[in-house]
Image 1 (cartoon, one colour):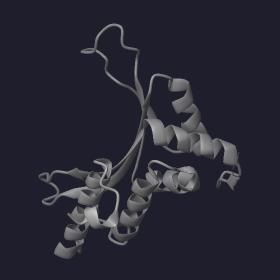
Image 2 (cartoon, helix red, strand yellow; image 1 turned 135 degrees about the vertical axis):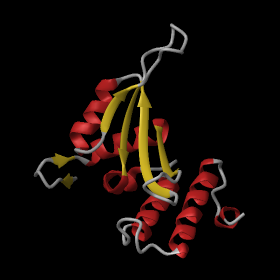
Image 3 (cartoon, one colour; image 1 turned 45 degrees about the vertical axis):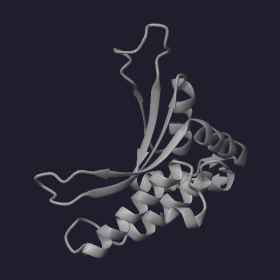
Length: 162
């Protein structure tokens, strides 16, 4: 059982159910954004999304956890027989908050969640891009690469360093 800052209680059963949805339908990413005219270097961030045809369950997660958004996916170019899809999305420190809540109940994506949380710990000490060293960006790229390898099924530590 978790008591949120707004004093609402989230049961262990609900957290386990949500973890099952994330294990089955969710994606945990460390995303890499290209440089822009405002930012001359790559930027990295944690992103969690869940895709589903049932927007009620995604809205329930949003209400219960208190973070994230549900969006309707554009189905314009999809076959007519395909059901409407929806996507729950949460990023950055809010994604880390979400992952920490469900971490004890995750099975399939536990290693990805741990890597995202670890990335955030090293990433959170530097706000903004000024003052970030080249080593900091190299470290972020390393986490980004590790996550990509995890997603491809390379899960043991020796293969992560390939």
